[in-house]
Image (cartoon, rainbow, N blue to C red):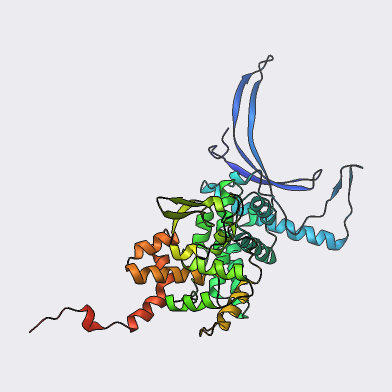
Length: 398
């Protein structure tokens, strides 16, 4: 029997004192089974029991071992009264939903599960990169700070509480608007996957009804010109493998996470054309990247097929090391140099040579062309300042 297709007629709150468990019981019209040997009509009850979690707990009133009622002190009785009041309100909401044929059936077996416990278990089964996994874990920690919530309690009101919590952190300078939006999107992503496992339902509507979270102003970062890359290539670096990888990425557009995992078996050569087969971090799909002769110069000596190209390359303090190296070159740069500046540089170099945004997007493996425009935003602004209108406009005689 598909419980979501039954026409339920009643929903009632009930307490099982033997298990110290509160639950909602849906009931529908009984199914006639016919008459028994004595001519008595028999029916099969149609019921669905849904455990209702109580985040603040409920003190047991019965000892199943001694089969005796438990005499609770006044403060525990008061605690239970408050929880019963909340449960009765929940029962009223469910009865109201029932009249509109809105059922909470598909949460029946998992509604008592905590979101954080499910999320950690789910993430352990995925193949995310280390940095992306850490971002998801941080998101779950922020959700727990609002409340270690059960799936049954996740609604628009809770999403708004989470948004308010993030906005409060932004007000005191602990988060940027961009980060607020990232945590919001990560929470949505986790709940969307939970919905696929029938842990929760109506996620899209829940977020649609919640308060809006604006996108922050993304930081543009640095670009390096051909001349500046030549300066960097000639500048010694204490971490030479990092230097080579960064310059390689500037000429290929490969992400640093992909570069770290790149193996010699991924480097192919055919008809004098060298390519790299990249398993992209974001979508786990392979992408073939053409490698120029200039980029090949920054690849170390070839080893075994299963060996990594940039052996011993790690994330450890990489942005600080890059910044120190760039400063030692004498190039004037404001702020930190980051690993992602290599992809921006690659996009800018390709655009300058081809003036083809589609080629840039293909190199950077962008599905949405608007993402490519973000990468080129500052670069395109700088090039506009250098435009000579007399060179690009036709000479029309009047």
